[in-house]
Image 1 (cartoon, helix red, strand yellow):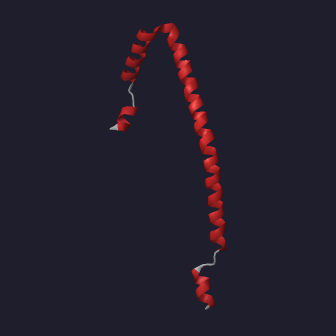
Image 2 (tube, helix red, strand yellow; image 1 turned 120 degrees about the horizontal axis):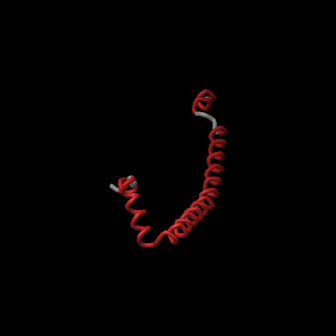
Image 3 (tube, rainbow, N blue to C red; image 1 turned 45 degrees about the horizontal axis):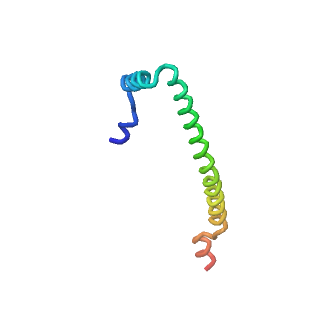
Length: 82
């Protein structure tokens, strides 16, 4: 249900643009859309700044676990020694 709300068809989009044009006028609407675009851009930049350090730490942990798994002797070699 929620995923269906995110998809807007052409007719609905034209209706929304028409109502916005009537409410705010032709001169104010481009300024508002420009501000909205800048806000979305800042939001993406902020999420990128948050996720990059998290991904770096995740990669370090993954590399460390890969190294420790390679250094750990397997059960077969332990059984062969006995």
